[in-house]
Image 1: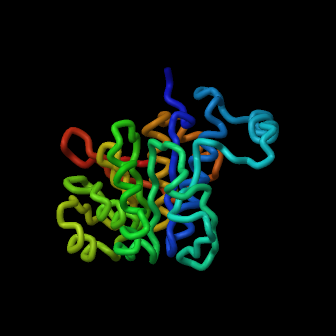
Image 2: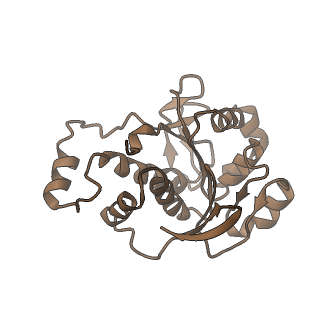
Length: 244
């Protein structure tokens, strides 16, 4: 049976000072991919197909149960660029998940605060579960993954102007210094460059789970046509360039 996006229960973590794009970009990619889960892989998306799937769901809230945000609190959170977000759940009532997505932003530097409010514990617990499918970060969210104990011995990357700080703080991680890539994938771990690289990294996760054809249709559906996004994937012990 072919994998579907609805197999993934995706928890997008938020905290004070998290970067808006790092949350919204992956949310959009995963929402669209899940919405069109049942569209035949071999069939092009026609206007009628789009209208039928997008407009006749009967769900006026547009919410999908397998994609949600979680934070230390459900009170308003002030994000890195000043927008205010509300999380769907706090750590105390969050449903089960098998994918964790962690943003960067100014708040990703606040390691002690993230430890104190339970963010690092939640990420560590979810990322080490036996049924965890993917652990993903955007931009400096890799620092949060690292401080949550999830990147030791893992090939990874981070925002390109933070290489030296990352190497100093997290020497056990296998940092890839390459400003020309959007992401690095080492097994279930996907880490990325700056905020807009979160779109490319999300596309790669979609491709890994449901296949290249469906990823290509998603890319076309969202007009994600330029530039070519590329990353490095660990295969047979070597990092291999891969375009999405």
